[in-house]
Length: 331
Image (cartoon, rainbow, N blue to C red):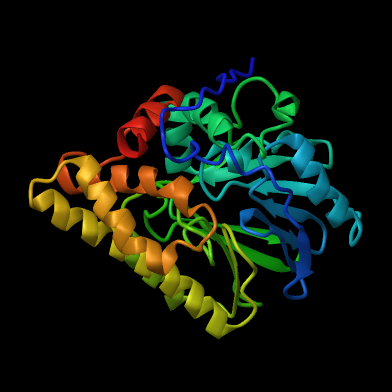
């Protein structure tokens, strides 16, 4: 059974989360290398596709099976090979609840890190209820999502190598950042990396479940692979080494700027609302044009304040906590 929270407008100067984001986005499906493709949509969550010799791998599923069908349609325009592998770069509902659509296309395995699996056990249903409320456009076909959660059928710690015929795909845990369960997919023969939400491009990193202190080193670990092309979690596919560097630097700068502002404010004894107002004003001139900036900032600052004070691990977001926080910071 899908639990959908009835949306009630909080007493706030800003519309809650992405409730006002109702405009359709233009989808781009492009080939990055011999085997790698990117499905992007003007800042909406991206999907990566790897077409091997004998099978297809999809990286992040879209929010619902209905949305996933458009990914499948694009894949079928270039190959009829079975979509055997669905990889979850991490666990957030908007990334994973479309998984069932791929099972009808030859799907055999849903793969994630063990840390991501543990997050599902701990907070999967809370996350599902929360994100359905945050993203009404992306979840407008939520009735197509099967009851329950998206569970990995295969997990790993550190590294897993999958061979699509002669094509090597490495799934790597390079450190915590966006969540504790983040992984990337790496094609060493083609220097293409799929980062999930560890890297964004002209889109605001969501950090409500983040590890701010770890994230910069994780980005450095990505950079050490020297990818020449990169599919970020949100934003356009990065087509050369200069663009990849820009995506890494932009994400790193945002994470560091936000956490430093919050850390200083918390250290001065300011409360969360005071720190939020100051940090929003400080970051808005540089990052305010990025996609979902207004949506992310209350969640990001709340998590940063927690990490800088008393909660080394992210607290669980619930639909009710989302709204209480929004009223506290934006009311």
